[in-house]
Length: 481
Image 1 (cartoon, helix red, strand yellow):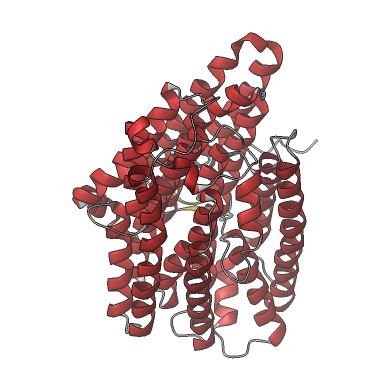
Image 2 (image 1 turned 180 degrees about the horizontal axis):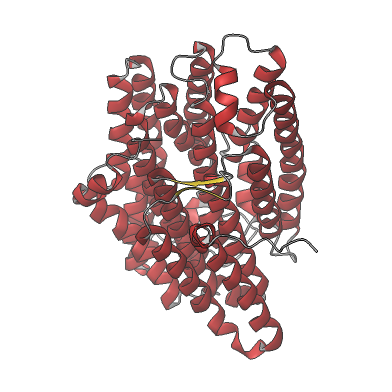
């Protein structure tokens, strides 16, 4: 009889954050099934599991490769993992009042959310294409389920079906791209594919395979022209879940794009840099121009998210060690300000699935002063107005574009950001300078929801006012990556 294979302790230690998230998800599910009266314990339990996983992720020094080189921990993956877990924690806090108000069971919701976070962390650390695809599918299946979680609403079911069909189609693109790269390079390890792609003797099929992978993860980041799913999915999905959906998959996809682009840039074919620049410009232009015409706040934030992912691509146009710091800072800023905005939306709109008209917030800055101030801070940060973290992130991206000689991209950032300021300030104007048009009814504004809003809004304000500790933390992310 063959000897049993024992996983080395170092590999298990490297996987500890993911194991904690998975185990907490299973525990939440079992608790909900066998102790139905303990539903109020589920959000705190899920939040504690996320905090413990985050502590192990941040406190443990990057351990390098694990599981035979299939996974890798670095300063960049730790930083992205922290951003993902921040968005997971805020989504958990924001979800408690929503689930109670809509009378939806919470066990499977929190379990799926934790398993989503597990998939995101694995995806950001995968250095082998099959491992990457398995992590992507774990993430995607949970995302599709949560997008249609409010199953009594036709708009939620419609959004989930659209998201599933498009996502399954894109997954086939990714799998076909992996097959082409394996067929041409003879390996699925990303580090071993790199020398082949830069050898100067690359076949058209290998280039097509890489292009399919880039398109697949551009879909996950909702980059134009792969963005059609985002507004409908955001509209139908539970608003607290969109706190996670709008950030975490995009953060992991950004890391995957960095890994893929590092194979061919710098020193490779300049056409890949031109492709990324084109995607960035299209996303910034389409996202901001279409967001201008939106009257629904969730759809407006969906289209603005497309623009923000365009800004995030700019440091990847000329990939270098200096690209990682603006990338991580901007992702953290986006996680906080987007989480705050969607949490306020979930608290102040009592009819999920219906239109979330901006005009319905008229005068509510005075009726709900705490939520009004927090939403204002988030809108200012989304617009890149100081002294918020959104301004710091956008400034770092702008400076990086100038330093690398991309003046045209820098000008596009400025021009499209001015468009964004208009529709973000429109929300602030509606909150404070228009008379009320409706009385609040059916709202459940609990303590956990307020905590999520305050953490998100004042986090972006404090980090924007005193950015030194954050900038010191992200310094040197590109070293050795």
